[in-house]
Image (cartoon, rainbow, N blue to C red):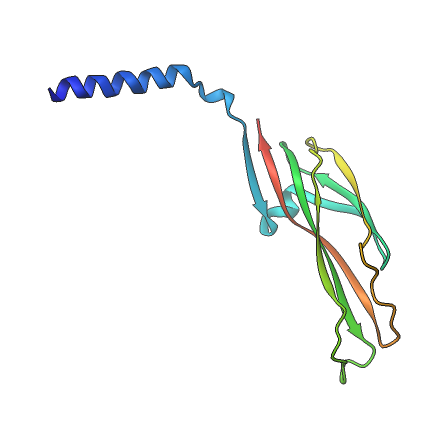
Length: 138
């Protein structure tokens, strides 16, 4: 009886292995910031309070997509010894959904949906970096 069950289970597994070939699956692996700059980098970045633009470059041998770019608007007080209480700084995450082939680049452009504060008690320090992406293995 046990050998009959074993034979039935083995034959079902073999049938599934024949029906679902392993080469039909494409893998997409999300990656995070620690390894991002080895695979995806930024170039020709221009950042102002009204617009951030640049290029995302794929440095890997696989395609990438869903590149997540962090745009950090850090508020710098004119008098850091006596900062105000209303810090207008913020972080924005902009997704570039285009698939980028190995060695290629894609342009991106971001304009804040609500304008940044125009104030005289400080200024914005804007930094842009890749914080995530999906690498496609084919």
